[in-house]
Image (cartoon, rainbow, N blue to C red; front, side, top):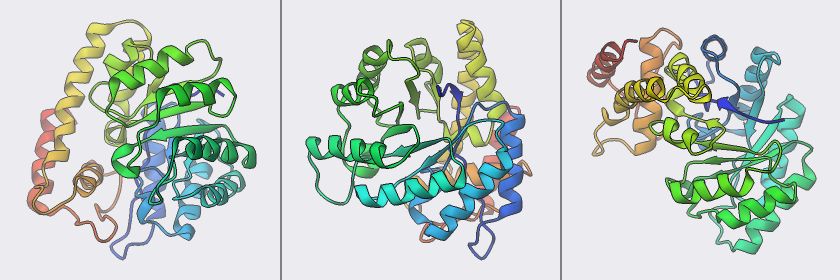
Length: 303
């Protein structure tokens, strides 16, 4: 399996009581598929995976896999602190019918590069799914080493990378080091530089903003793949403007996670895709004034 194109990290719609809103999640998956996405990333950071119970994670993955119905691959986040816990979530992903697994380095515990190496090798050996590494140092306090990623890819341990490190030099080294490995997928998590990294050789993107405008991101990916870089830049510029919705919530009252996830959910609510913009406790749900500001950005960017 080779993952390319746009693979949004699916947000998790919630009811006013904080339960999973199954009907809204089904509509969202349908909306993303209609938008032309190439895959779906369930239980990622934008999906609030760290806030969910295991029961909710199982429910969400079941709904996404069932609703996608094999139209695109579903990759499942197994975001847990240590190896055995990741493996446990990996087995749940296999049971649900996911097509691939995504895991970070171990976190909360202090770790070492040799332990990170053993971690990914143990997960891949224990779970019969292609494994992608998730490089997100802002969340796990560890930056994955490019040489280590390339080595794990050459050894058949890693089938890809989702890069949210903010280190474009590191990502470029991984792209160069894995270019001759069949099926390896180098995916960026940066919403506003997809055109640049695809020009540099990335296979696709996992943009949280892709929940809000999958059609736009699909057009962007198609322009990049077709070598139409003028059209790609035009589309990316519009999406960069749309991404300003994450700045609506003031940093004095909301974390960056709440501001981003809340903005994506609020935009989807305004667009009529999901019923509420509720976020998990202790994050704060965006208010009416913030919703109006997001609606103004949607109008300005053609949505």
